[in-house]
Image (tube, rainbow, N blue to C red; front, top):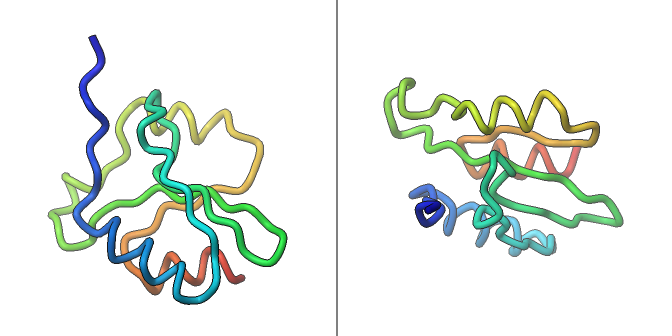
Length: 93
């Protein structure tokens, strides 16, 4: 049986900041199997964001094996971010 998907401690802060700049945000971390945490829409473009909490030690910020596998096979845009600033940059650039 699969465990409930864990939400990163900084997810609420990042979601709030992205919505404040006018992005639409759909949490998708529940999908599991390495799928990123957020689907973000900004000015007609979609970006997938994998969140890691930059306040945690580096060992706690590593991608899981499922995440590594997912990222290696995905042929679209995805970014790993640790802060609000990184999330906004990933979506708006």
